[in-house]
Image (cartoon, rainbow, N blue to C red):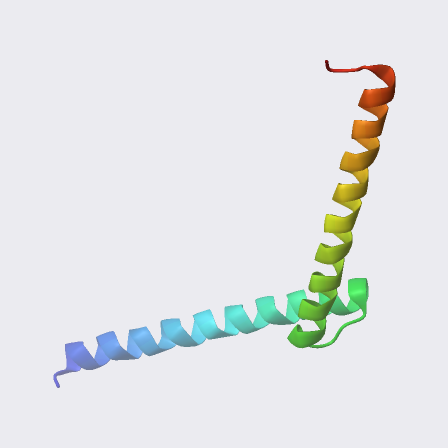
Amino acid sequence: MDIKEFERLKDKVERAKRELAKAEGALEEVMGQLKSTYGCTTIEEAEKIYEELEEKTIKLEKVYEKKLKQFNDKWDVLH
C-alpha cells in the first residue's frame, strides 16, 4: 500500500464516520418526535401505533364510503 492509497482509504473512513454521525443524529431526531407526538420510545412501539392508526383509517374510510353512498342514494346525487 502506498501513501496515496492510504490517504484515499483514510478519506473514505472519515466520510463514513461523518455519514454515521449524521444518520445517528437523524435517528435521534425522529425518535424524539415519536416520543413527543406518540409517547413511544422504541421502533417496536412506533410500529404498533402505526398499525393501530392504519386500522382506524381503514375503518373510517369504510364508514365514509358507506355514508357517502347513503347520501347519494337519498339525494340522487351523481347519477
